[in-house]
Length: 263
Image 1 (spheres, rainbow, N blue to C red):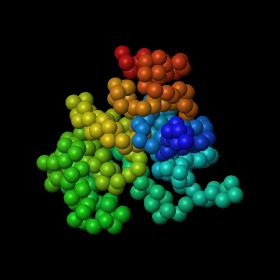
Image 2: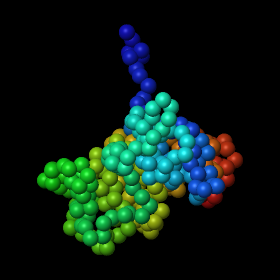
Image 3: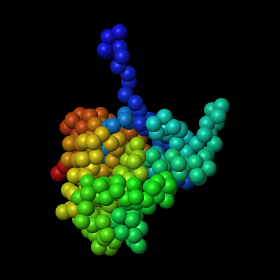
Image 4: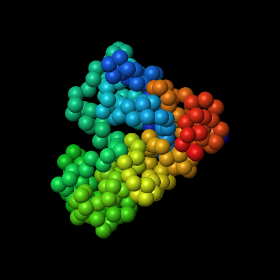
């Protein structure tokens, strides 16, 4: 058998099929079809209100979808399916699925009464019931990795916005997720603090972490993403390699968006 015949298709980490979501009469997602292979980075671009963040929240069932399917590493998210019918999982079942999906929000959502280290160890100990000593050792290493080795005992109020966001990333990593979702992780930061957070995300991408990033940081998307997806009015209007979508966009809405943000 030749080497070529042994090759298999890449393992798909996120598979969305026909995903629709409405808030009352407003249809926010209008049939999203998307696949992200294991180990790749996808950046979602588009104007505010295009559905990017809603789609991200649907991936870990923070928002219920109205139609379609979302699978993460082969597992149907949020529902059990039998004979073509879906039944929403119990909350404890959904919580078990979320253990494998890290999420970093625009606002850091750290526990204000806990130190940086305590914020990072809370999930593995409280949710996964891991041993405190082992988790602490791992958390210290992760905080060192994100450049916060000297901030273990600092409370969120004592940290800059960029440092708080790096703690939030460390907290997600401490759960050993298969996938990390980033929802505009730098949009709430002062410009001088953005680069430190993006450097951490670059390091994660280089390490092979599977990531979906909603962002307006075009330079980051061009440098780090394996695939760029442009959304408009709840639909994917263009997707491809960064050089294709950002360097030679085909759709008028992509062209208009990039013309504004690249000025």
